[in-house]
Image 1 (cartoon, rainbow, N blue to C red):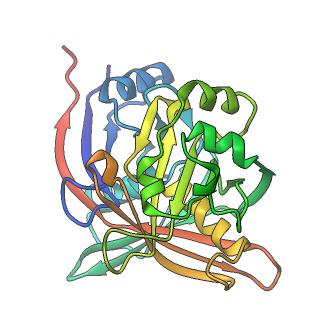
Image 2: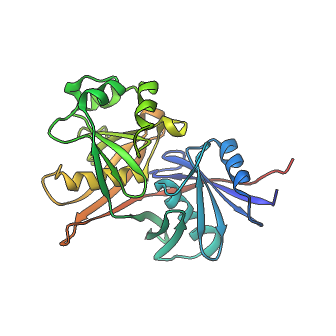
Length: 294
């Protein structure tokens, strides 16, 4: 196996050792797909990324089980590593070439260091709706815990999620996935993850609380999910959750798994009727190392 250097970063974190951890690999030679999948399984983070072209910023994303065409915290975390370790200077924008296509990343700086890193997502698509009774059974909640003013809907900005509005933080905390029922549903849906949210928060200044379940991908609960929160941002505008056609909010996630995270969401309905979505967060370098060939 070629010599590989890797970087462990905390994404959507307000300080080191919070947020969603990510391993970003840069190798002297191109790895085979099976090698990348094996490394991702060994790392056992929700995702691991590989920079396969240092010139074109080609990036591939793997969970421990499968390759993904797009994911949020790997995109932002990998852009941070490219800016810090390859470019080694401040840039305004980067274009990462993912399997789904090019994704623009915008850097904001504070005291000369990266502050919030923003990722633009693809225009959202809104597809099927789901029955409240079914979803409440999957989440082990009462039907009355779900906010019936808004639909349960599948939304995608590159990776599809089932978006579920809840009424209270208590309901969000009580949610516990019935794995068998969840996997049965996922066999017949494009979405392989469920995002639940509510308007009550733990920390002043935040706007929503979120949890994300991705048992289909071998991730019982994700600490911070950029792609899922991008879908949420589009959903909030589409259904005018805040009674307006644009949002600029802060979302807390990851408290239930001991990795408190903060995500920044922007979305706006354009004059043409489409919705633009951006997801932002801070990134911290936690560790570096080299892959052993032993």
